[in-house]
Image (cartoon, rainbow, N blue to C red; front, side, top):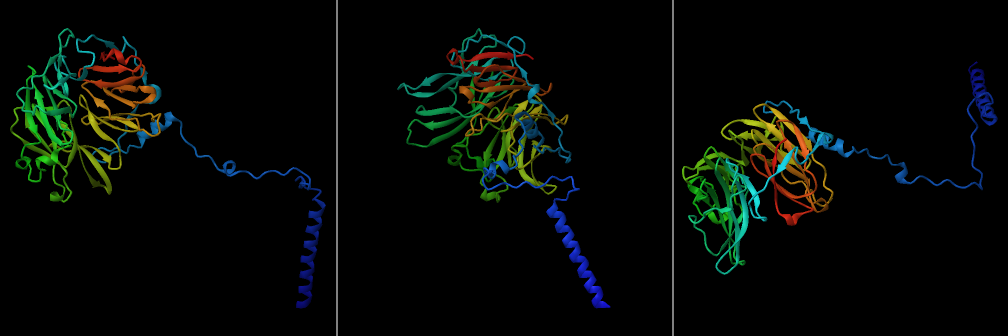
Length: 445
Protein backbone atom coordinates (compact mmCIF):
# COMPACT_ATOMS: atom_id res chain seq x y z
CA UNK A 1 0.00 0.00 0.00
CA UNK A 2 2.81 2.35 0.79
CA UNK A 3 4.58 1.71 -2.54
CA UNK A 4 1.38 2.48 -4.49
CA UNK A 5 0.83 5.77 -2.68
CA UNK A 6 4.39 6.78 -3.39
CA UNK A 7 4.03 6.02 -7.12
CA UNK A 8 0.78 8.07 -7.31
CA UNK A 9 2.44 11.02 -5.56
CA UNK A 10 5.41 11.01 -7.94
CA UNK A 11 3.04 10.77 -10.90
CA UNK A 12 1.01 13.81 -9.71
CA UNK A 13 4.18 15.90 -9.22
CA UNK A 14 5.46 14.96 -12.64
CA UNK A 15 2.13 15.86 -14.22
CA UNK A 16 2.14 19.23 -12.51
CA UNK A 17 5.62 20.02 -13.77
CA UNK A 18 4.59 19.02 -17.29
CA UNK A 19 1.48 21.27 -17.24
CA UNK A 20 3.47 24.26 -15.95
CA UNK A 21 6.11 23.72 -18.62
CA UNK A 22 3.45 23.58 -21.40
CA UNK A 23 1.86 26.81 -20.14
CA UNK A 24 5.18 28.61 -20.09
CA UNK A 25 6.05 27.46 -23.60
CA UNK A 26 2.59 28.41 -24.85
CA UNK A 27 2.89 31.95 -23.42
CA UNK A 28 -0.07 31.52 -21.10
CA UNK A 29 -2.68 32.46 -23.69
CA UNK A 30 -5.22 33.54 -21.15
CA UNK A 31 -2.78 35.83 -19.25
CA UNK A 32 -2.86 39.62 -19.92
CA UNK A 33 0.90 39.87 -19.32
CA UNK A 34 2.69 40.72 -22.61
CA UNK A 35 5.14 38.25 -24.05
CA UNK A 36 8.85 38.66 -23.42
CA UNK A 37 10.65 40.37 -26.29
CA UNK A 38 14.23 39.27 -26.83
CA UNK A 39 16.93 41.20 -28.72
CA UNK A 40 18.16 39.65 -31.96
CA UNK A 41 21.85 39.19 -32.56
CA UNK A 42 22.05 42.09 -35.05
CA UNK A 43 20.26 44.69 -32.86
CA UNK A 44 22.18 47.74 -31.63
CA UNK A 45 23.48 47.02 -28.12
CA UNK A 46 22.23 49.25 -25.29
CA UNK A 47 25.17 50.59 -23.22
CA UNK A 48 25.19 49.89 -19.51
CA UNK A 49 24.39 52.92 -17.34
CA UNK A 50 27.39 54.79 -15.96
CA UNK A 51 27.89 55.09 -12.18
CA UNK A 52 26.80 58.74 -12.38
CA UNK A 53 23.50 57.67 -13.97
CA UNK A 54 22.76 55.08 -11.32
CA UNK A 55 23.93 57.15 -8.31
CA UNK A 56 21.11 58.74 -6.32
CA UNK A 57 21.81 62.51 -6.18
CA UNK A 58 22.41 63.98 -2.72
CA UNK A 59 19.80 66.59 -1.84
CA UNK A 60 21.17 69.96 -0.86
CA UNK A 61 19.04 72.85 0.40
CA UNK A 62 18.95 76.12 -1.51
CA UNK A 63 21.13 78.93 -0.07
CA UNK A 64 18.22 80.60 1.70
CA UNK A 65 17.12 77.40 3.42
CA UNK A 66 20.73 76.55 4.28
CA UNK A 67 21.15 79.90 6.07
CA UNK A 68 18.00 79.35 8.10
CA UNK A 69 19.09 75.82 9.00
CA UNK A 70 22.45 77.17 10.21
CA UNK A 71 20.64 79.24 12.84
CA UNK A 72 18.60 76.27 14.02
CA UNK A 73 21.76 74.16 14.42
CA UNK A 74 23.41 76.56 16.88
CA UNK A 75 22.27 74.45 19.84
CA UNK A 76 22.05 77.36 22.28
CA UNK A 77 20.47 76.85 25.69
CA UNK A 78 19.54 79.01 28.63
CA UNK A 79 21.30 78.28 31.94
CA UNK A 80 18.38 76.13 33.13
CA UNK A 81 18.81 73.88 30.07
CA UNK A 82 15.85 75.25 28.12
CA UNK A 83 16.61 75.33 24.36
CA UNK A 84 16.87 78.81 22.91
CA UNK A 85 14.24 79.58 20.27
CA UNK A 86 15.70 82.48 18.27
CA UNK A 87 13.72 85.00 16.27
CA UNK A 88 15.14 84.18 12.84
CA UNK A 89 15.48 86.95 10.28
CA UNK A 90 15.13 85.22 6.91
CA UNK A 91 17.29 86.43 3.99
CA UNK A 92 14.11 87.50 2.19
CA UNK A 93 13.32 89.83 5.11
CA UNK A 94 16.59 91.80 4.77
CA UNK A 95 15.73 95.41 3.88
CA UNK A 96 17.81 97.27 1.27
CA UNK A 97 19.14 100.40 3.01
CA UNK A 98 18.20 103.61 1.22
CA UNK A 99 20.11 106.87 1.58
CA UNK A 100 17.87 109.58 3.00
CA UNK A 101 15.53 107.02 4.55
CA UNK A 102 17.75 104.76 6.63
CA UNK A 103 20.94 106.82 6.80
CA UNK A 104 22.09 110.35 6.03
CA UNK A 105 25.67 111.33 5.14
CA UNK A 106 27.18 114.20 7.07
CA UNK A 107 30.22 116.35 6.46
CA UNK A 108 33.28 115.90 8.63
CA UNK A 109 36.33 118.11 8.95
CA UNK A 110 38.48 114.99 9.46
CA UNK A 111 41.27 114.58 6.93
CA UNK A 112 40.40 112.28 3.99
CA UNK A 113 42.64 109.52 5.32
CA UNK A 114 41.21 109.59 8.86
CA UNK A 115 39.44 106.42 9.94
CA UNK A 116 36.67 106.58 12.58
CA UNK A 117 37.31 104.45 15.64
CA UNK A 118 34.64 105.45 18.17
CA UNK A 119 32.26 108.23 19.16
CA UNK A 120 32.33 110.05 22.49
CA UNK A 121 29.24 111.05 24.45
CA UNK A 122 29.12 114.54 22.90
CA UNK A 123 29.28 113.14 19.37
CA UNK A 124 32.98 113.85 18.79
CA UNK A 125 34.70 111.14 16.78
CA UNK A 126 37.90 109.42 17.85
CA UNK A 127 39.86 108.91 14.63
CA UNK A 128 43.17 107.53 13.47
CA UNK A 129 44.75 109.82 10.94
CA UNK A 130 47.95 111.54 10.00
CA UNK A 131 51.27 109.72 9.89
CA UNK A 132 53.79 110.63 12.58
CA UNK A 133 57.53 110.52 11.85
CA UNK A 134 60.61 110.86 14.05
CA UNK A 135 63.45 113.38 13.67
CA UNK A 136 64.98 111.28 10.90
CA UNK A 137 61.76 111.32 8.91
CA UNK A 138 61.06 107.65 9.58
CA UNK A 139 57.51 106.40 9.96
CA UNK A 140 56.58 105.96 13.62
CA UNK A 141 52.81 105.69 13.89
CA UNK A 142 49.46 107.04 12.84
CA UNK A 143 48.27 109.87 15.02
CA UNK A 144 45.09 109.45 17.04
CA UNK A 145 42.83 112.30 17.99
CA UNK A 146 39.34 113.78 17.99
CA UNK A 147 37.16 115.52 15.41
CA UNK A 148 34.39 117.75 16.76
CA UNK A 149 30.74 116.64 16.78
CA UNK A 150 29.54 119.16 14.17
CA UNK A 151 32.32 118.47 11.69
CA UNK A 152 33.40 122.12 11.77
CA UNK A 153 36.32 121.65 14.15
CA UNK A 154 39.80 120.63 12.98
CA UNK A 155 41.45 117.37 13.94
CA UNK A 156 42.86 117.61 17.47
CA UNK A 157 45.61 115.12 18.18
CA UNK A 158 45.73 113.38 21.55
CA UNK A 159 48.42 114.68 23.90
CA UNK A 160 50.61 111.66 24.58
CA UNK A 161 53.56 113.62 25.98
CA UNK A 162 52.94 112.37 29.50
CA UNK A 163 53.42 108.72 28.52
CA UNK A 164 57.01 107.48 28.46
CA UNK A 165 57.90 105.89 25.11
CA UNK A 166 61.24 105.29 23.44
CA UNK A 167 61.74 107.78 20.63
CA UNK A 168 63.12 104.99 18.46
CA UNK A 169 60.08 102.78 18.96
CA UNK A 170 57.33 102.15 16.48
CA UNK A 171 53.86 101.67 17.91
CA UNK A 172 50.69 100.28 16.43
CA UNK A 173 47.05 100.40 17.41
CA UNK A 174 46.59 96.87 18.73
CA UNK A 175 42.93 96.92 19.73
CA UNK A 176 39.60 98.54 19.13
CA UNK A 177 38.86 101.77 20.97
CA UNK A 178 36.47 101.41 23.89
CA UNK A 179 34.47 104.45 24.99
CA UNK A 180 32.55 105.44 28.10
CA UNK A 181 31.26 109.00 28.18
CA UNK A 182 34.14 111.25 27.11
CA UNK A 183 36.83 108.66 27.93
CA UNK A 184 38.51 106.55 25.24
CA UNK A 185 40.68 103.50 26.02
CA UNK A 186 42.89 101.46 23.69
CA UNK A 187 46.13 99.43 23.47
CA UNK A 188 49.32 100.27 21.60
CA UNK A 189 51.75 97.51 20.69
CA UNK A 190 55.35 98.70 20.81
CA UNK A 191 58.17 97.56 18.60
CA UNK A 192 61.76 98.63 18.30
CA UNK A 193 62.77 100.79 15.39
CA UNK A 194 65.45 98.18 14.71
CA UNK A 195 63.77 95.56 12.53
CA UNK A 196 66.24 92.93 13.70
CA UNK A 197 65.08 93.19 17.32
CA UNK A 198 61.96 91.79 18.90
CA UNK A 199 58.81 93.62 19.94
CA UNK A 200 58.99 95.79 23.03
CA UNK A 201 55.60 95.06 24.60
CA UNK A 202 52.33 96.96 24.92
CA UNK A 203 50.61 99.83 26.75
CA UNK A 204 46.96 100.31 27.68
CA UNK A 205 46.20 104.03 27.34
CA UNK A 206 43.26 106.29 28.18
CA UNK A 207 42.41 109.76 26.86
CA UNK A 208 40.22 112.11 28.91
CA UNK A 209 37.82 114.84 27.80
CA UNK A 210 40.72 117.22 27.16
CA UNK A 211 42.55 114.67 25.01
CA UNK A 212 45.31 114.09 27.57
CA UNK A 213 46.59 110.50 27.46
CA UNK A 214 47.60 108.55 30.57
CA UNK A 215 49.11 105.11 31.02
CA UNK A 216 46.70 102.58 32.53
CA UNK A 217 48.82 99.41 32.29
CA UNK A 218 51.84 98.01 30.47
CA UNK A 219 53.67 94.75 29.81
CA UNK A 220 56.65 96.01 31.83
CA UNK A 221 54.79 95.72 35.13
CA UNK A 222 55.33 92.95 37.66
CA UNK A 223 52.03 91.16 37.20
CA UNK A 224 52.98 88.60 39.83
CA UNK A 225 51.81 91.20 42.32
CA UNK A 226 48.34 90.83 40.78
CA UNK A 227 48.26 87.06 40.26
CA UNK A 228 50.70 84.44 41.53
CA UNK A 229 50.89 82.64 38.18
CA UNK A 230 51.00 85.65 35.86
CA UNK A 231 53.64 85.47 33.13
CA UNK A 232 56.74 87.62 33.28
CA UNK A 233 56.92 90.82 31.29
CA UNK A 234 58.96 89.51 28.31
CA UNK A 235 56.41 86.73 27.79
CA UNK A 236 53.70 89.32 27.17
CA UNK A 237 55.19 90.30 23.82
CA UNK A 238 52.72 89.54 21.04
CA UNK A 239 49.78 89.19 23.44
CA UNK A 240 48.56 92.76 23.71
CA UNK A 241 45.18 92.92 25.50
CA UNK A 242 41.96 94.38 24.17
CA UNK A 243 40.68 96.64 26.97
CA UNK A 244 37.13 97.77 27.62
CA UNK A 245 36.05 100.62 29.86
CA UNK A 246 32.93 100.32 32.00
CA UNK A 247 31.87 101.93 35.25
CA UNK A 248 35.03 104.04 35.38
CA UNK A 249 37.27 100.95 35.27
CA UNK A 250 39.34 99.36 32.51
CA UNK A 251 39.00 95.58 32.06
CA UNK A 252 41.55 93.45 30.21
CA UNK A 253 43.03 89.94 30.18
CA UNK A 254 46.49 88.88 31.28
CA UNK A 255 47.91 85.41 30.53
CA UNK A 256 48.99 83.03 33.27
CA UNK A 257 51.22 79.97 33.35
CA UNK A 258 49.13 76.95 32.31
CA UNK A 259 51.56 74.51 33.87
CA UNK A 260 51.35 76.22 37.24
CA UNK A 261 47.56 75.98 37.21
CA UNK A 262 47.43 72.41 35.78
CA UNK A 263 45.89 73.84 32.64
CA UNK A 264 42.69 74.82 34.46
CA UNK A 265 43.28 78.56 34.02
CA UNK A 266 44.96 80.23 31.06
CA UNK A 267 43.85 83.84 31.47
CA UNK A 268 42.82 86.19 34.25
CA UNK A 269 40.45 89.12 33.82
CA UNK A 270 41.68 92.12 35.79
CA UNK A 271 40.28 95.61 36.17
CA UNK A 272 41.97 98.85 37.10
CA UNK A 273 40.70 102.36 37.68
CA UNK A 274 41.59 105.02 35.15
CA UNK A 275 44.23 106.50 37.45
CA UNK A 276 46.32 103.35 37.00
CA UNK A 277 45.83 101.86 40.46
CA UNK A 278 43.38 99.77 42.51
CA UNK A 279 43.85 96.59 40.46
CA UNK A 280 41.37 93.75 41.00
CA UNK A 281 41.18 90.16 39.79
CA UNK A 282 37.64 89.90 38.41
CA UNK A 283 37.56 86.32 37.04
CA UNK A 284 39.82 83.43 36.05
CA UNK A 285 39.69 81.32 32.93
CA UNK A 286 37.52 83.66 30.84
CA UNK A 287 37.84 85.11 27.35
CA UNK A 288 36.51 87.96 25.23
CA UNK A 289 35.24 90.39 27.88
CA UNK A 290 32.57 92.79 26.60
CA UNK A 291 30.51 95.48 28.31
CA UNK A 292 26.82 96.29 28.00
CA UNK A 293 25.31 99.45 29.46
CA UNK A 294 25.30 98.00 32.97
CA UNK A 295 27.51 94.89 33.17
CA UNK A 296 30.62 93.10 31.90
CA UNK A 297 30.29 89.68 30.30
CA UNK A 298 32.84 87.09 29.16
CA UNK A 299 33.14 83.64 27.62
CA UNK A 300 34.01 80.98 30.20
CA UNK A 301 36.06 77.81 29.98
CA UNK A 302 34.45 74.59 28.72
CA UNK A 303 32.86 72.23 31.25
CA UNK A 304 30.53 69.24 31.31
CA UNK A 305 26.89 70.29 31.64
CA UNK A 306 24.34 67.45 31.67
CA UNK A 307 26.96 65.19 30.09
CA UNK A 308 27.78 67.57 27.21
CA UNK A 309 30.90 69.71 26.88
CA UNK A 310 29.55 73.24 27.09
CA UNK A 311 30.88 76.78 27.16
CA UNK A 312 29.06 79.43 29.16
CA UNK A 313 28.63 83.13 28.50
CA UNK A 314 28.63 84.60 31.98
CA UNK A 315 28.16 87.88 33.74
CA UNK A 316 31.44 88.78 35.45
CA UNK A 317 30.85 88.43 39.17
CA UNK A 318 27.57 86.62 38.48
CA UNK A 319 26.03 83.52 36.92
CA UNK A 320 26.01 82.18 33.34
CA UNK A 321 23.43 83.75 31.03
CA UNK A 322 23.81 81.48 27.97
CA UNK A 323 25.13 77.98 27.26
CA UNK A 324 26.93 77.30 23.97
CA UNK A 325 28.17 73.89 22.72
CA UNK A 326 31.96 73.84 23.08
CA UNK A 327 32.19 72.65 19.48
CA UNK A 328 30.36 75.80 18.33
CA UNK A 329 32.48 78.34 16.43
CA UNK A 330 30.44 81.22 17.87
CA UNK A 331 32.63 83.99 19.29
CA UNK A 332 31.60 86.76 21.67
CA UNK A 333 32.24 89.84 19.51
CA UNK A 334 30.79 92.74 21.48
CA UNK A 335 27.54 94.35 22.53
CA UNK A 336 24.70 96.43 21.13
CA UNK A 337 23.33 98.40 24.04
CA UNK A 338 22.03 95.70 26.42
CA UNK A 339 22.46 92.93 23.82
CA UNK A 340 25.38 90.52 23.56
CA UNK A 341 26.68 90.06 20.01
CA UNK A 342 28.01 86.68 18.86
CA UNK A 343 28.98 85.45 15.41
CA UNK A 344 30.36 82.50 13.48
CA UNK A 345 31.04 81.90 9.81
CA UNK A 346 27.41 80.93 9.23
CA UNK A 347 25.38 83.05 11.68
CA UNK A 348 25.15 86.34 13.59
CA UNK A 349 23.31 86.23 16.92
CA UNK A 350 22.15 88.96 19.33
CA UNK A 351 21.23 87.85 22.86
CA UNK A 352 19.38 89.90 25.48
CA UNK A 353 20.33 88.12 28.72
CA UNK A 354 17.75 89.88 30.88
CA UNK A 355 14.76 89.44 28.57
CA UNK A 356 15.98 85.99 27.39
CA UNK A 357 15.43 87.06 23.82
CA UNK A 358 17.58 86.02 20.85
CA UNK A 359 17.59 87.44 17.31
CA UNK A 360 19.63 85.60 14.67
CA UNK A 361 20.30 85.52 10.95
CA UNK A 362 22.24 83.04 8.82
CA UNK A 363 25.23 84.34 6.87
CA UNK A 364 25.84 83.84 3.17
CA UNK A 365 28.80 81.69 2.16
CA UNK A 366 31.90 83.28 0.70
CA UNK A 367 32.26 83.64 -3.05
CA UNK A 368 35.87 82.45 -2.69
CA UNK A 369 36.10 78.79 -1.61
CA UNK A 370 39.61 79.40 -0.25
CA UNK A 371 38.51 82.25 2.04
CA UNK A 372 35.77 82.10 4.64
CA UNK A 373 35.08 85.80 4.07
CA UNK A 374 33.17 86.16 7.32
CA UNK A 375 34.92 88.13 10.00
CA UNK A 376 33.48 89.00 13.41
CA UNK A 377 30.52 91.33 13.82
CA UNK A 378 30.95 94.81 15.31
CA UNK A 379 28.65 96.22 17.97
CA UNK A 380 27.72 99.78 18.88
CA UNK A 381 25.22 101.45 21.16
CA UNK A 382 22.36 101.05 18.66
CA UNK A 383 23.14 98.59 15.88
CA UNK A 384 25.56 95.87 14.79
CA UNK A 385 27.48 95.64 11.49
CA UNK A 386 29.14 92.72 9.69
CA UNK A 387 30.13 91.51 6.25
CA UNK A 388 29.42 88.11 4.76
CA UNK A 389 31.99 88.43 1.98
CA UNK A 390 34.46 91.30 2.42
CA UNK A 391 36.49 90.46 -0.70
CA UNK A 392 33.78 89.85 -3.26
CA UNK A 393 34.46 91.78 -6.47
CA UNK A 394 37.00 94.02 -4.74
CA UNK A 395 34.49 95.12 -2.14
CA UNK A 396 32.34 93.75 0.64
CA UNK A 397 28.60 93.32 1.19
CA UNK A 398 27.76 94.73 4.62
CA UNK A 399 24.69 94.42 6.84
CA UNK A 400 23.27 96.41 9.74
CA UNK A 401 21.11 94.85 12.48
CA UNK A 402 18.84 96.50 15.02
CA UNK A 403 18.18 93.65 17.47
CA UNK A 404 15.43 95.55 19.31
CA UNK A 405 13.42 95.72 16.10
CA UNK A 406 14.68 92.30 14.84
CA UNK A 407 15.49 94.00 11.53
CA UNK A 408 18.46 93.66 9.21
CA UNK A 409 19.41 96.04 6.39
CA UNK A 410 21.85 95.53 3.52
CA UNK A 411 24.07 98.55 2.87
CA UNK A 412 24.06 99.72 -0.76
CA UNK A 413 26.95 98.97 -3.13
CA UNK A 414 30.20 97.19 -2.37
CA UNK A 415 32.31 98.76 0.36
CA UNK A 416 35.93 98.72 1.48
CA UNK A 417 35.28 98.05 5.14
CA UNK A 418 32.75 99.58 7.51
CA UNK A 419 33.55 100.94 10.95
CA UNK A 420 30.67 101.10 13.39
CA UNK A 421 30.72 103.62 16.20
CA UNK A 422 28.38 104.40 19.03
CA UNK A 423 25.42 106.73 18.65
CA UNK A 424 24.52 105.36 15.22
CA UNK A 425 27.57 106.64 13.31
CA UNK A 426 29.19 104.59 10.55
CA UNK A 427 32.13 105.22 8.27
CA UNK A 428 33.11 103.44 5.07
CA UNK A 429 34.93 103.63 1.77
CA UNK A 430 32.93 102.73 -1.31
CA UNK A 431 34.60 100.29 -3.69
CA UNK A 432 33.76 102.50 -6.66
CA UNK A 433 35.20 105.68 -5.15
CA UNK A 434 37.92 104.81 -2.66
CA UNK A 435 39.91 107.88 -3.68
CA UNK A 436 37.19 110.07 -2.16
CA UNK A 437 38.18 108.94 1.32
CA UNK A 438 35.93 107.89 4.18
CA UNK A 439 32.23 108.64 4.01
CA UNK A 440 30.49 109.28 7.33
CA UNK A 441 26.78 108.60 7.86
CA UNK A 442 24.28 108.69 10.69
CA UNK A 443 22.03 105.65 10.93
CA UNK A 444 18.38 106.53 11.47
CA UNK A 445 15.98 103.66 10.72
